Structure formats: C-alpha cells, structure tokens
Image (cartoon, rainbow, N blue to C red; front, side, top):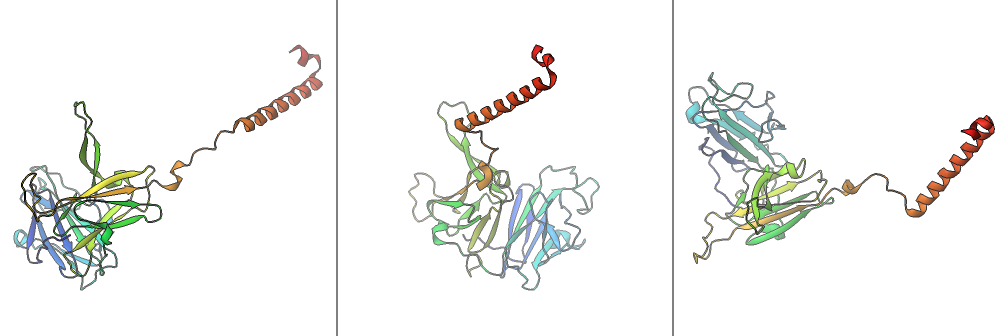
Length: 316
C-alpha cells in the first residue's frame, strides 16, 4: 500500500474537526512534527522520558528510547509544533506504534500538565497515531496482498500472526489500528435480515491482539501490516479490514483503470483449551457400578449399626 509521506519540515495539525492524524517514522522519514488545533492541548506523556503512550487511550506505556520527543518553545509553539524523531538511525528490530492525544483546553489554560485535562470548550479530542517502522522491512506474501475483491486469511494456534498488504495507493481502514470491522444483523424492523458493517475494538474480540504497520520492501512508501494474536480467544472470531482506493469508481460510472476496493477477511481460531469442561458424567455402565458400590457400603454400614445397637436399631 502506498501513501504520501509527510515531509519532516511540515507541521501537521490535529484538530477537533479531523478527530485523528496518522503519521509515520521510517529510515527515510526520521522526523514528524505536529500540533494541536485551536481549543486543544496535548495530553502529558509518561513521566519517564524514554516512554510514550502505546495505546489510543493513553494509559499504556511503551518503550520509545529509540525516539526523541521535543516540545515546542513557548514563543514558537503555534508555528513549530511538537517534534518526534528517530535517534541517529536507532530504529528497532520490530515496528511499534505510539499515540498522542489532543484534549480540549483546560479552563486554567497552560500546557498539557501531568494529568488529563477537563475541557471547557470543544468536547472533541483528536488522536495522533504514529507508526514507527523497524530497521528491516516485513515482506508481504503475494497471496496475502489484497487487490480486487477479497483475500481470506487465518490465525491459528500455530501461526499466532499474519502479515498482509493492500493494493497500490489503497488505504487500510479502519485507520486506527485498535479497530476492526465486523458484520452483524441489522436491528431495523425490515422483514428481510441484512448484514451491516460495524467498527469495533479489536481487543474486545481477541484479547492482547495488535496491528502494526511497517515497510514491506526497500521502498519506504510500500507498507504491510502484521496482526498478532498471542492469546487466542475463547471462541472463534471473524472480522475484516478494507483496502480503499483513493478514488473508488462510482456504481455504473463505466470508469476503468481505477482499482476496486478489497476486503481482508481475518478468521481467528479459538484457543485449544476453550472446550475444556468439568469431569464428564460417567457412562451408563460406570454409573451402575458406582450405584452398586454405594448400595453395598450403605448395607454394610447399616449391618454394623444393628450389631452394635441391638433392638434400638431394629425398632428404629
């Protein structure tokens, strides 16, 4: 999949109207700059200088020692923005993702502070997702490249992950790596049952799963995606991504040469021990043996009681 890479000198704005901003750091694009739009301010990063937020909620820390985060000076804040850059070709062996969040400006003003701010103006936040590529590309198997139509892939207890890619210039959706699409029956009152597309949280389906973006070959703008599921779910799950071309042709337009969208269908098998239950009930023959043994024990106990207590036991 190819997308335009933002130049390091360009400051990207995360505004409440956009809701999200997606950036990349790679061997050829070693710095990104961004700022929060009007009425928003950046949420404080972790106190440890070598850590950044590793999830969209900004509650999970991730090792970002290979990166340098530089806030703007108070004078040039509106022009220069925040800077996130790679430390002298210090890309890691595995790709990862970091997040920043622009919250509504607090009533007290000031910068991001040490806690989440409570907005007094706009109620909409803006999320910044930054893909950090690794030193080496992650090749996408040709069979896993989604071109026209659909490609079906599976994650099993043996594989635990899968790598896939989109057609040239197509964009993967959902753009937020923590989300996926599912299909569920429509809740409308129509007689005929129909399936509707719904965007949901990936980890709600498969705990501890994650999607990362990385270069797919030596061309930095050609990327692939690796979905990892170290912990399989208790029940099998099916969801999908979409590879959306920049200008999908309209129905009946008769246009040719424009790639169609493609669906990446992912199935994740349930964990092998998910069928484990309590000790099974004994079979008919075994049950008869158990009942017979119990009857013999009761009879022997009753005989011993009679021998020890005489007529009192018999009269009882």
